[in-house]
Amino acid sequence: MPAQLIDGVKLSHQLRADIARRAAELTATGRQPGLAVIIVGDDPASHVYVRNKVKACNEAGFHSVLEKYEADFSEQALLDRIAALNADPAIHGILVQMPLPKHIDPSKVIEAIATTKDVDGYSVLSAGELVANLPGFRPCTPYGCMKLIETTGVDLRGKHAVVIGRSNTVGKPMALLLLQQNATVTICHSGTPDLGYHTRQADIVVAAVGRRNTLTGDMVKPGAIVIDVGINRDDEGKLCGDVDFASVSEVASHITPVPGGVGPMTITMLLMNTLESAERGLAKNQAQPGQASGMDPKPGLA
Image 1 (spheres, rainbow, N blue to C red):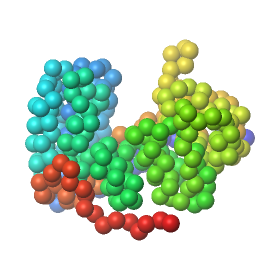
Image 2 (spheres, rainbow, N blue to C red):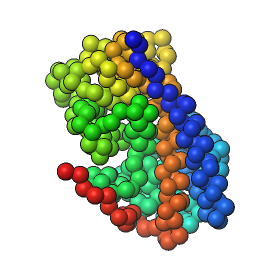
Image 3 (cartoon, rainbow, N blue to C red):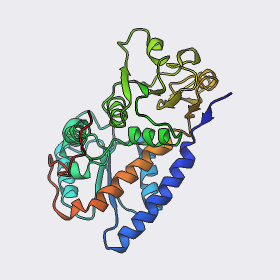
């Protein structure tokens, strides 16, 4: 029996409706959620992504600020703008679109964003909060993947999850989020021999390496849940993921399509993080770069 599709578009619409409702309630109290997006340079794909993010903010009833700068905008000028937004009580989230021009250090830029407004969840302190099981901001794509997995009704406790990919933005945080739900997690990567040996044992597989046909049907345990994070092009130029959808969908119980799976969820979870930042009311105080969120930790998991 073919796998059941996990519809990211449908789930995204449901979550955005709830986000808009909560945003309206918050706005009625005088605290409208606010997201600032900065883009430097003229990368066409980046401008498309930014437009989509601003559009999503407006549709959800958020206050949005879009700042566009030429490719020769200096690193110090960018850091100064981030500092100003850190201190702006109307802004609850700050996002700097990547990639940046070569003369700007992305790490320095990310670390300049106050942790209380790091709604991408990319800073070292945000990563530390995730490792320490503190309720900070979860990186948007892994956060969206977890929401997609939830729709299957699976209880992750004791399940074996394999994450293919070890990036700081998807692979590593994905593994940590699965661990928080008491899954047993294996991380595979380019140095892993016999990838199929690991994936054939997995109840959940998350593929996030950016290479098509990384996961094929003969590498999947019957009944497994497969989440495809990859965005690639096939020989005909059509969008595809890291998973060979045709063969894997004949073996898995649930699978995300590309497009229409993980993609729509990423911006949705950016909205969710921004909303949660506004709800916490942390922006009432001037946020400082390098300041941890200061929220009470969750109980540790053995």
